[in-house]
Amino acid sequence: QVDVEGDKVWFSLSKNGEELESGIVNADGTVENQTFTATADFGDGKDQLYFITYVDSIFVSATDSFAVFKYTWLIDRDDTTVIENGDEYQGFKVKEASKDGIVLKNSDSITLNLDKGTKNYFTDSWYFQTSDEGKGSTSPNGYIIYPATDVVVEDKNATKPAGNSTEETNMTLSSNESEVISPDYRAASSSEIADSEDKNSSSEKAEEKTPEKLSGFGIVSGILGIMICLALRRNS
Image (cartoon, rainbow, N blue to C red; front, side, top):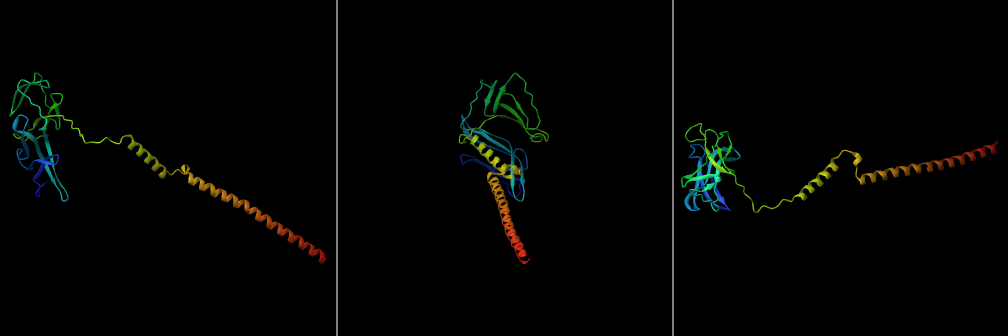
């Protein structure tokens, strides 16, 4: 939630509907002021860092407001990996493992690319992420380089998609729509063809009846003609 002045943001971190952490972060200030961290007791240690986020910017308008978070990472407190001195982890030898950090040693060199959003992998899943220029705390042109890893999260409650049945339904609807909007009159429906045939047959019947009426009128005219001739002969 963004405040009215647009320079602070309130947010909360929840899991399964239960709030774990909440805080207010300034969006205009130093890197420390724009960063929020959360600690808890888990694994084999106490007060350990498990969540961190950085408020990059805040946008406020007449109808809506939102905040942009970057460089966020979260540790699963219920599934942790314990790394001790002398262990080998993804090709690296653990030289030091303490609350202040982990020191890994590798005989191969690592080249960092400082381009925006670049991932520099140094193991199969671990990489160094580079921030935007100017995010460094010691120089206005500095960078923040932090380790990260790829994690695939599976939703156990997700249901399987309908699959082929949905595609078949869409295909059927598309076919029906093309028949409705098609301007080709040759593709007329069977009911239209039957109606056309009924009209043609009615027209043919009307034409057949018309000659019968005309022939009857001719017979009456002939009889009248004969009667007139007979009357003229009698008068003569």
